[in-house]
Length: 173
Image (cartoon, rainbow, N blue to C red; front, side, top):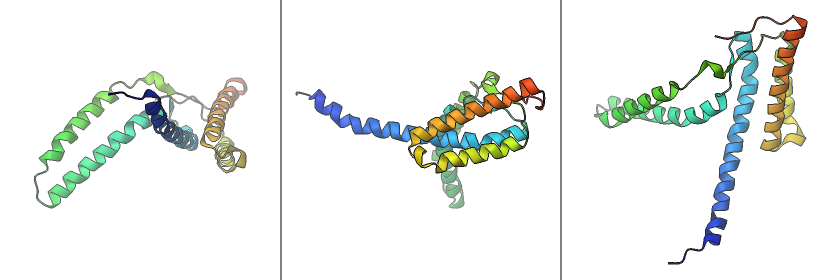
């Protein structure tokens, strides 16, 4: 049995490309969601999490499986059918998720000052410009632009607070 490694390598390239394309699409979506949610978090006095993208990447499959199992249990209860086949995996899933949550750390939280209200409008306008710009149509370019805008705005908000003294208190739970 002779395995042709070159042929196997060429066959695996589309799978790898598709994986990276899907991952980039997921990261782009997460950057956009984070970018849009920052003004609401700052206005509510909540810190940003440095692990939000990794958390969302891990949390999505758990949430999907949790909802599927819970829905199956609900349907079984409506039909008066034994739902133990779904309850046991749901209990294990909940236990695993509780263990994963135990790894959380307060040092992952990033506290920013609560900026003036005009910066909230600036967040929304710049996010809209990035999304509708014809030069930033690809996910990679748009992701880089959103990441740069997030970093720049975080720096400017902190810089404004540090040197002008006009910012409000830092928010950290």
